[in-house]
Amino acid sequence: MSAAPLPIGYLVPEFPGQTHAFFWRELSAIEESGVPVEVFSTRRPAPGSCPHGFAEAAAARTTYLFPPRGGAVAGFLAARPALLARAMAYVAGLTQTPAAQRAKLMALIASAADLVLHCRARGIDHVHIHSCANAAHVGALANILGGISYSLTLHGDLPVYGTDHGAKMARARFVSAVTAPLQASLRREIGGNLRFPVIWMGVDTARFRPAPVPRAPGGPFEVVSIARLNFTKGHRFFLRAMAKLRAEGLDIRYRIAGEGPERAAIEAEIAGLGLGPHVELLGSVGEDRVLALLQEADTLALTSIQQGEAAPVAIMEAMACGLAPVCSIIGGTPDMIRDGEDGFLVPQEDVAAIARATGILATNPLRRAAMGQAARATAERIFDHRGNALALRREILGAER
Image (cartoon, rainbow, N blue to C red; front, side, top):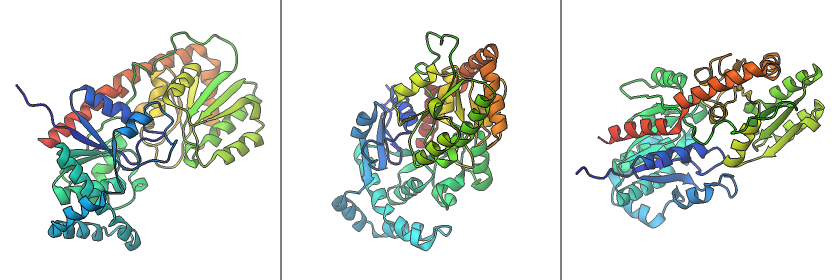
């Protein structure tokens, strides 16, 4: 009889949060496959920051590494002065990081020591970290202090996650990327013998699926966005395209789910374009509401700009619900969408292109339906969260061996 698999550690910064539905799906799928998962996070998120139904259960099972347990950590480090010196030398050697920031990063040593203690108590040999920012330093330091092996997932462009990526990744067993372009950037900028598998973030295609009863014809063309109200999400460009389409006679309504620092600017844009009666800001919404919004919509718009967008889960969820999205060419979106077949890709900030793509979907229901069916097929083939969770599980178990 084969031995039961060892538990694996799973670390997500400030878990659970507004955008963390994917992580909950992934770790649940790994557990369904028979591998226990112990959840860690850097610090507890602000109250109310996770609107999803799993928030309470997720927080209850998460071990937070900051603040670390003072007495236990102090005793651990005092008994290992040579390892403590190596950990301090690691931080001091982060030459791409300014000196003042390096001084602050010294505090991560205590959290890394606490992670080692938790892992030893629970029989964990490997921790997977869903970040390449400071949480990756915690993984490297835990490896130095206690030999805990670790792996990372890169979710966006490397510059978004700070500096000294070579140091963060040098001890990792593998660094997965959520898109092929991110994989290419890792090979180019990190290289070496490190493995860089592509493992998509996933969506529950059994749950996120087209509405059981199609929307009745007639009424306004319904567009939804599921995105934080941040500058880089580019809501203003879809609003301008919407104003253009309305001026051309298209009856279009736009609902925006998400919250963030750009709310006032977006409200001003809506007012300035005279779109007040036709746009609804919904604030943060839970996963159940996201599903309902997608099943009620005709398309999803994501007109992001600059860096940081890799493989947007909102696009996967929309495609799983049979929507052909209108999406910026950014990050890995060209790997997700076949332009004109299961969605439209538009240049960043190109209001005319956004309006043109949206207009095609709005005025040609037969083509919209065909593209929606193709989008659903793509989601089932590529984005299903269980298949991707099993791919991560295989990589982790291989790393343990």
